[in-house]
Length: 95
Image 1 (cartoon, rainbow, N blue to C red):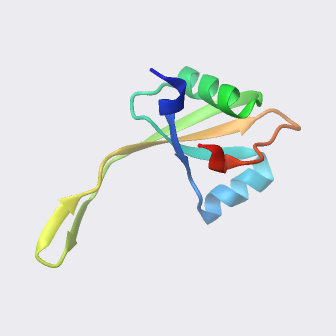
Image 2 (cartoon, helix red, strand yellow):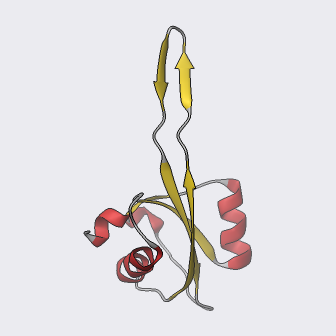
């Protein structure tokens, strides 16, 4: 798997901002087939930082309905990456 395809986008929520400031942890939407080792390798390569740990969570898609039409949101995987002390990701927009 290509390292650029592992990380899809960053998660920008209030909770993600709090854990980023308080614990130096960053949240990303990643490929569903990526494991912790690949995620760690991708973050270290793309952002030139030292990763301390990686936690992952799988989320099931939900059915959505708008008027007469209905659809389904796809499943996704989130990774919370803890960086080593003194490390930070300055520009997440590079993804």
